[in-house]
Image 1 (spheres, one colour):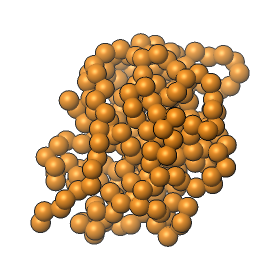
Image 2 (cartoon, one colour):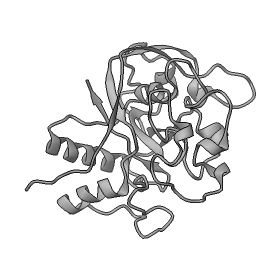
Image 3 (spheres, helix red, strand yellow):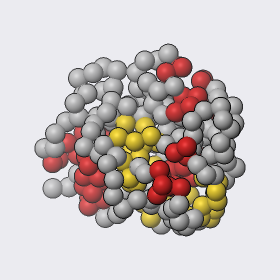
Image 4 (cartoon, helix red, strand yellow):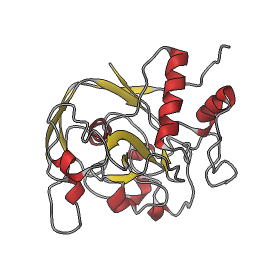
Length: 239
């Protein structure tokens, strides 16, 4: 059976170093993000936008996969909203299905890849700069109280051209969340711990306080079996 998948535009991120993590200021708890250091990554590509409900629906219909639990919630279920309510394992299964259709080894981004795509090479706090601006992202400060269509905040685009790296929905990352493994991870293509209890999520969401949660370096995590109404999917692939 041939399925004509919807468009999945990707941004090419060149190989090279960037500044990852946070320098502690004493003004807020940033232990999970420390130390700040230079990290070098191979070239890769990452989704310009988050995967939408319309895109995920093709997977559900083609494979008879279970629907996310929030598709009856009008705050979350518009076709052009990012799909949420998917577990880490659901995200991996979706990417394997899509990759098999297109002959591409799609995967989740590592958290280092995600952070470089979000902040570029200038170590900005947010995708647009160092000053929080609630008009550039869909977070609790925006007052929308719902998801928004992907790409709704062009003024919040990252230096490489990725949308919604701050707010709307968190993105699942490949890595296990671990404080010590992060702190002492490799300076080249780090992946963190080999096992753990929770997977990393990045980017903040429509219900999160964006001034803190939507910072490029902020690290959060959930158990990979859980599907949250604030966590979605962004594609990555090796180049």
